[in-house]
Image (cartoon, rainbow, N blue to C red; front, top):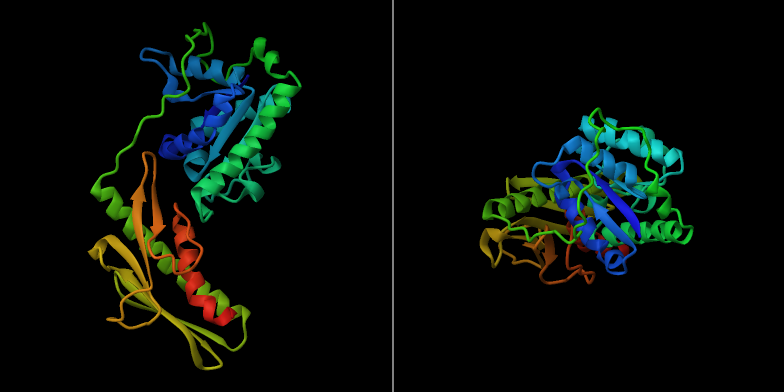
Length: 318
């Protein structure tokens, strides 16, 4: 059984929980046991316990975000020691790119990152697809480690500490890795996520119109902000209007939804509606009407924007 260590910033704990959930099948198959600093017991010596766990791990997952790179402990201590063990062939380091950041210019730039092509998880249209891709790549590494009997080699942990607190290491008792608890989300958090999503979609459409116009002679894209909660987009081909939309907060659910109308004027109803939902771990977006024909149950902000953009550009692609 391979030991998996999570190195992450506490600002990104939500993503660690989701990744750990996607590794459940490996735990059920008794191929891995995982550890992160939330496993620490009251009264434990923080540095000592982390020293032990990272020196004993077969697979070290680095959950990379700007927060991770900005954390001296994550970057200089945990990542530094992880790469030492990786170079020595004592462990496998897997960078998991959670959010876009300048990770390629760090020492991680020489490693093959997950998800595929190092595309950050939060930029995938669907969170579950991204985490599944990461989990499958971790499975491949774990199978290789278990098959080559590398896991037992950890019986002789390195004498090199990763902090000054590495003496008198205390062995912790065995415990379950199934310690993930249900999360709850306040109305404030839901409202904030909805407004952030609308702002993202607005920037996404404005940027997409600009690029569409730059790449296609004869195409003109016009973006107009109506108010803080509404904007319109119009695409002209050879001076003739080919497609338009109005996107804003509102609809059957009042201000609890983001609506899309294929008419760039108020009072014409809507063709699609996005709502913010959540499970026991994360907030996400769902399509209510599925007019685009490509519904996904758990959309990221980019996934939601792509779904609506597909509706706007469809008339030009027929």
